[in-house]
Length: 201
Image (tube, rainbow, N blue to C red; front, side, top):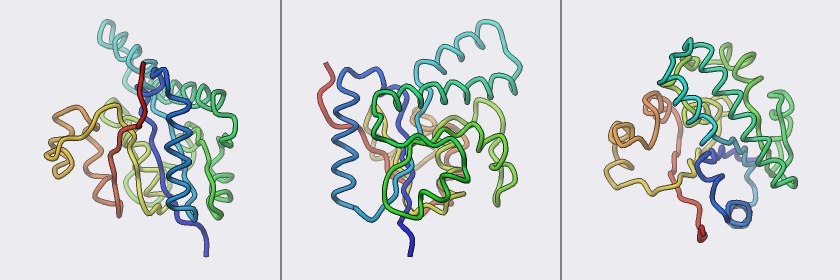
């Protein structure tokens, strides 16, 4: 029997925390101790990098398809930065390699651009739309669906309100998740929103 799979989306806004590296290490160590038989697939949001692209798009519009793939590329950059900070996390950029790794407990830091371009559109279920309506939260959710993961964790920079936890549309209205996310969340057994513990400063 293979490992249980959990996809963990690391919010890009967390990367600017002064204590991001030790706090992330602590979170993963605690998660691994509490559930050692799990393979955690980590995927990093674009954070400030994608926010800058949004600002440029708002100032002088960019073709929507081009903007989408530029945002995905910036997620790659953010993921590589995290991989540099946390070199003990194996960096994986091929979906086939990820499928091999998730058979055993462990951790993989996944760069999803190749998966999104090549594999994701042909996998079962509805492919992700191209545009700002599908951000890294939905990318992580779609990956979790394709991997048949038992759970998806969204690590955020703020707590979800009780209303947002019980109603994904309220979470969309509050800017906590993107507009595609509620449809994808319904297809996952467990979705948790957590904040990263520690003291930023």
